[in-house]
Length: 79
Image (cartoon, rainbow, N blue to C red; front, side, top):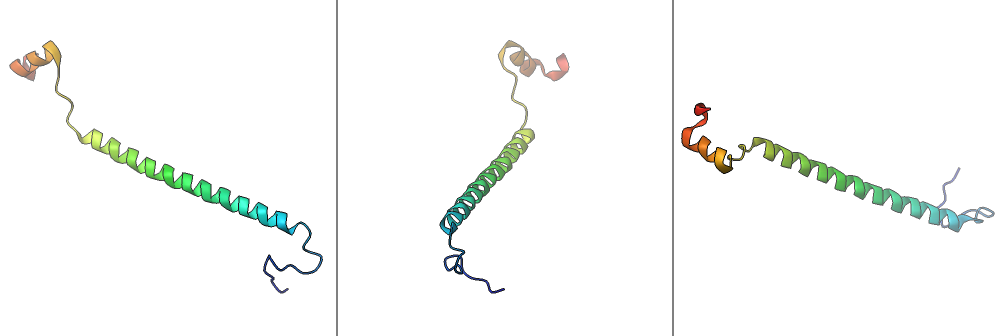
């Protein structure tokens, strides 16, 4: 069966054709939007993972306040 371009249907097949094209375009646009969302979420996940790895490798913050100063002065072995 010979394939014809959508804009050149055989006789009798043209009825409702414009609606089909509009529906296909709308679906194509939805797929494109969903793919963008997937790409954005993937990039966000990679960024979150990098941030969590960076945070996990940092040293813990120094103690603050009165007890923190005592720890610095007397060392951790003084507990």
